[in-house]
Image (cartoon, rainbow, N blue to C red; front, side, top):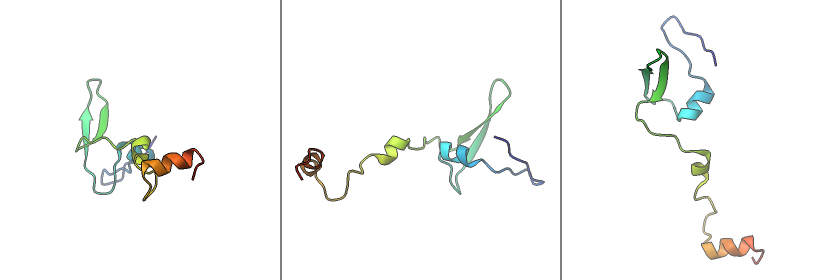
Length: 77
């Protein structure tokens, strides 16, 4: 992904990278120099963004208990 540096030295972080790192407006980032001389962008708080599976966790439906969910999956409801 390529982006352009402005006259003030600013760049726009591509959306795919922001989504991957969980960067939102107001987030702090670090630029780290790797041993090979490349620069790596990381979140300053070192938190990992939730995976797509973690974001779905716990969304079986409001007000349903385990027995009701199991009955629905079995076609008993």
